[in-house]
Length: 115
Image (cartoon, rainbow, N blue to C red; front, side, top):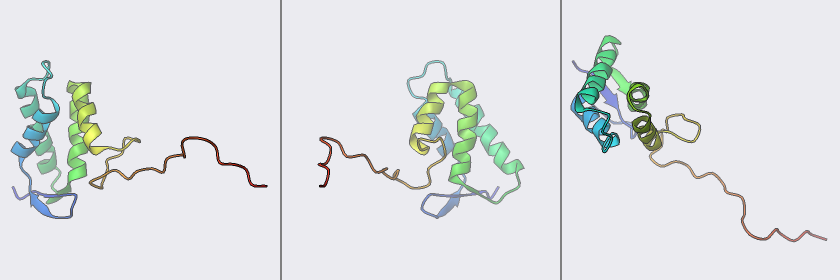
């Protein structure tokens, strides 16, 4: 009903529950305890939540958060797989396409002390 998703790059596209379902299937692949009906139910529930919220536009990160909440109740491994794609080490949803590399400490021998 006219719900738009604001993507990472700032563009908008219509919300597509089928696209969400494909993403859920991808992260739940090879998990025998998660049925396709479970994933359809999650997708429909997320769509209903978004429509009932009355907003015309939603950020992709909000959809990821809703999916994570629901997947945790169905299968923790699937939720971890989804989180690995969209969250940083602190558990917050990443907004950049690539995670920023943290400066790493120098490896090897210690630097000589100056006299």
